[in-house]
Length: 206
Image 1 (spheres, one colour):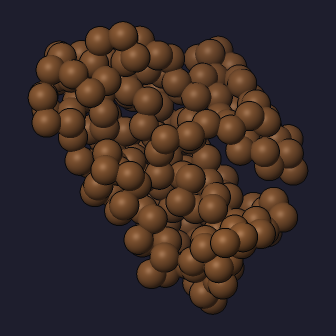
Image 2 (cartoon, rainbow, N blue to C red; image 1 turned 135 degrees about the horizontal axis):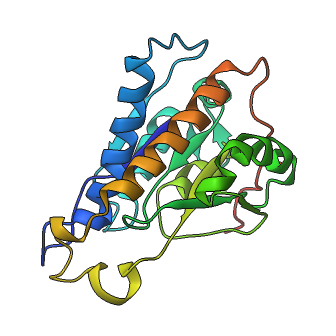
């Protein structure tokens, strides 16, 4: 699964937050379809609503299809999702990926990023990042990841402001991001095995 959120902040059109991420995910699928790729696994694209209100779109999707993070009672469909990839940090190039503490996936992602070293995408960090929809999947043990991106003027100018308009998008950077996303999707869908998972989180104590 790949996705971004399509809701926007009210002050502008939400170009970098997060039409950019949504467009990259659609373009990644267009690339794969254009080259005639036939995946071994189903590929699902999701464009979330209500991310800005508290990840409501992805959280309720996960609750309805995969399981409840409050009880950690999972549904059968949860075992069928190999990974979820998210893009939600503006228009900047992909520079790598956060592992969300999943060290077993580190060598896999490093090998996948190797062809893009000349594009500046070679960072794999064990660290976590928050505030977007991959967290909904990670909360029920499904590998969920957010890509690392160039910040551009996302944090200083466009994020949740009246400057978040179409002219702030970088076409070249979005093309780079779509290409790398398509490669991650290709490799994930062609693996014999599911992507490695962390230990299932414990249900929160009341």
